[in-house]
Amino acid sequence: MPSKIFISYTHKDEAFKDELIIQLKVLQRDGHIATWHDRQIAPGQAWDAAIKSALDNAAIIVFLVSADFLASDYIHDVEIKKAFERYHAKQCKIVPIIIRPCHFQDTEIGGLQALPKNAKPISIWSDRDEAWYDVLVQLKKIIPLDIGNGDAALVPPNKSIPTFFSNHDLKKLEQQGLKTQAVLTQERLNRIRKTYATETDPSLQFKYEGQMADLKKVLTELKTKIKD
Image 1 (cartoon, rainbow, N blue to C red):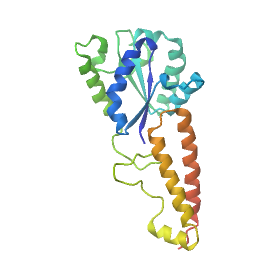
Image 2 (cartoon, one colour):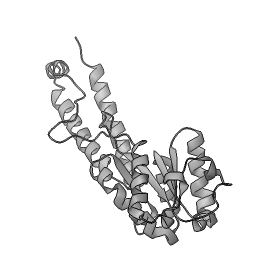
Image 3 (cartoon, rainbow, N blue to C red):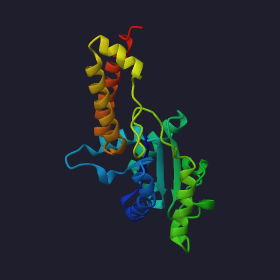
Image 4 (cartoon, rainbow, N blue to C red):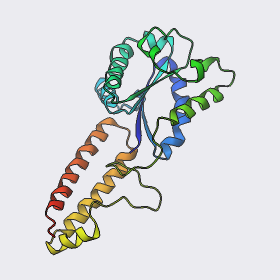
């Protein structure tokens, strides 16, 4: 499944957030990552709940660090706090990207390896493209770039998602009149896997995760009915 990346930033630094999104676009298009930031919150959606849900589901949390970022009470009290709770529980990785000069070294963030090289703020690089290139190279080292076979694995072109049942299993299920149910359930699971792999809305991700769990339960129950 794609690595979910939560981008934590202050709106005063939105231009830097947009530059990062552009740098990550190729990885997102290829299905390796799914990015999330607060501009993706839908009209009428509870923004605080949406942010906390996205934080809870992120594999990588990126901090776009500046003086304004460090001064934000919400970022400090909610986003940084929750990120480090999950980090210390080994549930996510945190990557600080220093975008403007600021005194971050004495904060909790200061204990982490920061990007770009030598934690030199992106805003003072003579070539910002070079700065972002360095960020991307380092980020790719912690993003799984292979396609796995997990519940939400993406499907390489011209290849099908691995099936839950072997041909032998299907023959046994056919003898019991259960083959059609097994095949249709597998097909539905595969469709939801593909949709989930590119979804960035946390509420929809949660919905699809529940659907996949229910379908896998059905498939597991069918598996137990196979008689040799």
